[in-house]
Image (tube, rainbow, N blue to C red; front, side):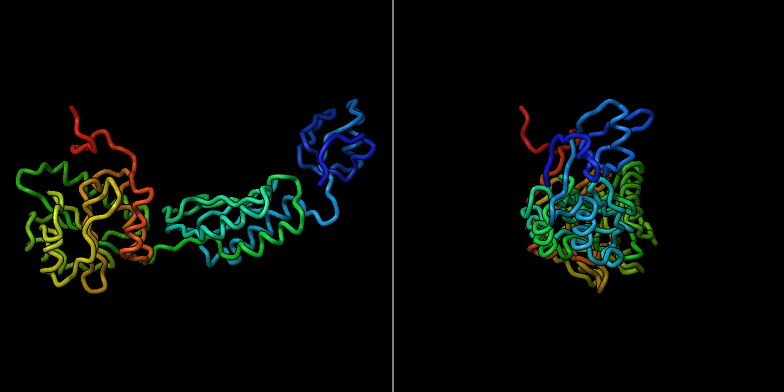
Length: 334
C-alpha cells in the first residue's frame, strides 16, 4: 500500500485518508474516491489529496478484518458469540448469553505477532460475560494489508476465543447465623449471593437460614434439590474442619479444597455432595464487589470445576482491589 498526497487528477479509485468537506457534503476518511467525489473536491478548490492506494496483493481493511474474524471464530454460534459487520477495518465479537470467556492466549499472541496492522484484542481469560457484552475486537489498522501477512495470520487464528456457557440451572443458598447476628447482615449476604446467581442466569430454588452449627448446615444440605449449593456462614471459615466444611462431610459430601490465592476471597472452600458442587463462600461475598468467590462460582456454573492447577494459576492477578472498609487490612497500622 502506498500512502501520501497525490494530485487530485490521480486520486480516483484511491482511499481517502482524511475526511474532507466538499461543498455541501462530507467525504469521510476510508471512502473510495469515485469520479463524482473527485469532482466535488475539485469544486472545493483542492488540487491534491492524501490517499492510500492499494497495490497488487493488498487486501482492503474491511475484507481483511472479516477474514481474520472468521478465522478466529469459525463457528460463532457454537462459540457463543455474534460477529458484527466489518466497518472501518473493525469487527466486534459479542456474547450471546451468560458464561465465561475462554481465550487461547497463544493464538492471540500469534495473530498479533504477524503484522502490526493485524490485531485481535480480547477481554481477559475467564472474564464473566453477559448477553451482548463486547468480548473481543479485530482491528485492521491501515487501510489495507499485504495478502501474505493476512494469510499468515489466518493460519494461526483458528478458534482463538469462545464463551463457555452457564450449564447449571438451579442453586440453593444456605446462610448461617451466629448468636446476636443482626438481621441486616444476613439480608446483605442473601442479596449479594442471589445477585451473583441472577447475573449468571441461575434460578435460586431455596434460601435457608440456619444456626451456625455443623448439624444444622448438614440438614440443610441434605434437603437440597439443586444443581449447585452455596454456603455463606455468619462466622468466617478458618479451617478445613470448621463448621461449614465439616457440615458438608456430615451430609455425605467431600471437601476438595480449602483456601485460594486470591485476596479478597482466601477463605473459600470447594467440594461436592454427590454430583452437586458445593461452594463455601468467604465473608467478603457479602459484598457485590469482585472477589475470589466470583472466579470459582463462574467457572463452576459453566461446568469447569477448578482443580489444583487452576487454583494455583489464580494467584497471577489474584490480588484484587483493596477495600478500605475491610476489618482486617493487609498491612499493620501504626
